[in-house]
Figure 1 (cartoon, helix red, strand yellow):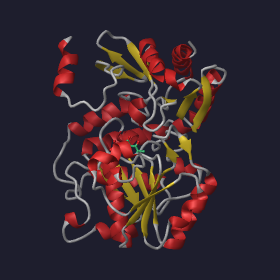
Figure 2 (tube, protein in one colour):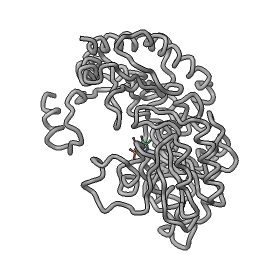
Figure 3 (cartoon, protein in one colour):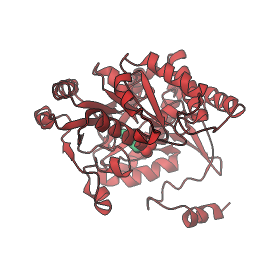
Figure 4 (tube, rainbow, N blue to C red):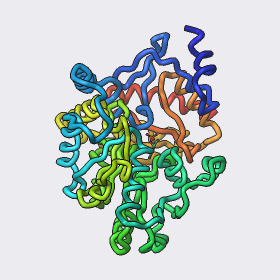
Length: 399
Ligand SMILES: Cc1ncc(COP(=O)(O)O)c(C=O)c1O
């Protein structure tokens, strides 16, 4: 077993030099990940907003097994009629506002963003794409062009041209959106910036400006979908509906899946005499992933899980609010972050959390804050244990 870690470093291309995270996973169940010594770690990251129902939810596992017993891959996306895709797309249409009624399934968040940008350019016949600084929309060449952080982009130029970046929540900058703009892409809550929530007036003004200029509004709800914030989709907190909705991560119920969702009118422009005139994907909407996704949706809705998300978030806030290492607690529902008074201690706190049996981490563009993003079905008792482990790790930020 000892050789697994050295083989990991030898054979798996490494994306990060940070060692504290090299947890050797033996199994995972509910809110816990277990290592090879059977030590448990409470997952306060949910695999970066993926495991909203915890690990291996029995209903999801059952749906996956049932689908595997019928068929797995049969044909590239959209050529055969596959019931797991159809049932899921139909259920999503029932749960979303009427204009968001048609789904294109893909494999990941990045691919959902790529597909949405292609759709917007094709539909509007315009080129310019506007996004907001400190957002992360993915690592593919197109999505990368939307990043404001030079360090992430500089080695990959030339990137997709005709991209403009504005400041999030700055209504005064929205006049930059014009009749040249194909689409504006935004997260409803900026994740990589350390959980920064959109102001209602900002989203309303953005919707208005997009309507005035015939620009499509795209929401990246790749981290916030499927109940993370206490609504099935975070935009429901605002009543400001996008033209295209991108989802992924938790939508797959721990299986790889993404989607961009729009109206029949907009989606219709993808339909051409060849699939590649629109978008093509081999594994997009994989039947096993779609079965897992539908089971996840059904558990969230049928067990009324959303009703308790806010009270669980309040319990966390109450347990953490007086901790002297904490400067601020941000977020909506169980999409939370904790900003530290002493950010230079953050690596120590992450390492101490791991030692205490708790998985948390800082954010892509915010090294002062730690994630508090547990499975949304975490119980009150589990929250108490998690916050004990977290508080004791935070104490190392005071030394
Ligand atoms: C907000 C947001 N958008 C897009 C993506 C890209 O998703 P994926 O990694 O599935 O390609 C991520 C991934 O972390 C994300 O957080």
